[in-house]
Amino acid sequence: MESADAVIVGGGVMGCALAYQLVKRKVDVVLLEREELGSQSTGKCAGGVRQQFSMEANVRLQRLSVSMFEDFERETGHPADFRQIGYLFVLTRPQDVEDFRHNMEMWHRVGLTEARWVDAEEASRMVPVLNVDDVLGCTFCPTDGIASPADVTSGYASVARRLGARLREGVDVLGIDVAAGKVQGVRTSRGDIATRLVFNCAGAWSSSIGRMAGLEIPVLPYRRHIVATGTFAAVPRTNPMTVDFQSSLYFHPEGDGVLIGMSDRAEPPGYVTDVNWDFLEKMFEQAAVRAPALAGAGVKTAWAGLYETTPDHQAILGPVPEVEGFWCAAGFSGHGFMQAPAAALLLSQLLLDNRSDVDISPFAFTRFARGSLVRERNVI
Ligand SMILES: Cc1cc2nc3c(=O)[nH]c(=O)nc-3n(C[C@H](O)[C@H](O)[C@H](O)COP(=O)(O)OP(=O)(O)OC[C@H]3O[C@@H](n4cnc5c(N)ncnc54)[C@H](O)[C@@H]3O)c2cc1C
Image 1: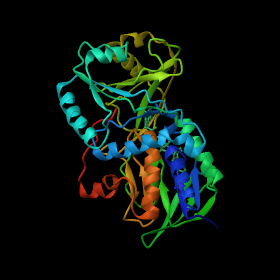
Image 2: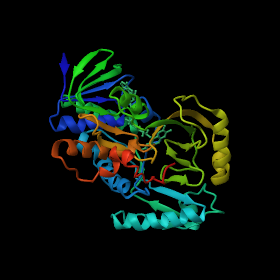
Image 3: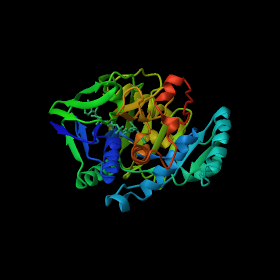
């Protein structure tokens, strides 16, 4: 029977980044992806990379990730197309301004000193299409930005392969063998693999991988939409990623056009990823309020993908103590592209060095049993 030191289930950005970090440290890795690498949530993602979170642990993680995006090409030899155009959070409710004041203090305390307040007048200079009539204030971080999910995933995958990792597509993981509370192997549509270590990197499907090992991994799938427009000069390529925090509407330059997204916060969880055109109408209604010119932008294409959401909107990183050898890198709650580089590095350190450069204990699975959940509030 084939064997491996570690089997990674799922070949999105997370699985590929982890395969790279592990094989770089001489771990013999097999990665199994039932579709194609990067074809699921990773392939539907808006590419946003930011450090402006409400939870300190997320800010620390993201500061590391941003430095890894900056260094990606030197490290892997592949481009990430990381463009630090900044993220502008637009605030229109007094409570949000109050919350972000606390966030700003925390950001500066942990070293994100380049984040700053921007008033309505400056915001309208930065983002000329923005309607600032009701804007109470904004936060801006110039080192945030956007990168290419396809480039980052294929970059990690190709270096991992070159270093000897076995990355397989079209292989469905069907079961995980556990005996005496320890992982023994993985059953797949193309034969079994003996291993003592499984990483659950299955994104929106992570709960089903958990059930294979008798575990409840609390990750639910939520549909999220994106529209890409044709050429739209009113949003130049230097326009920051702009987030209308109250409605969750966001937009950023994409090629010569604009990429626009918004969350349907009323939609229950589910795996459907058809485009709901009625919801897109609502999205454009909100665009007409926040950035009226956008309402006139022609839709070139639209798609929907899945967020992989935990009860506190924070990732699950590290071992699951109930089953020895079962680790999670899942539940990123819509931030997995930006978090994958740092998450992969830190998990490889925790596994091999029993420590990590940034403390990832706030993301431990055990928090659910303790009931000590503190929600990440900057989710869009
Ligand atoms: C519309 C939208 C916009 C987003 N925007 C952003 C953004 O701006 N910034 C950001 O950071 N994040 C964003 N996200 C979230 C981001 O896309 C995800 O958090 C990230 O891609 C998760 O990566 P992953 O590798 O964990 O999951 P995935 O990319 O979903 O990979 C998991 C893989 O596991 C495979 N798999 C599942 N079950 C099995 C099995 N049994 N056997 C084998 N393989 C299996 C799946 O086929 C899949 O390819 C967005 C998501 C959506 C939908």
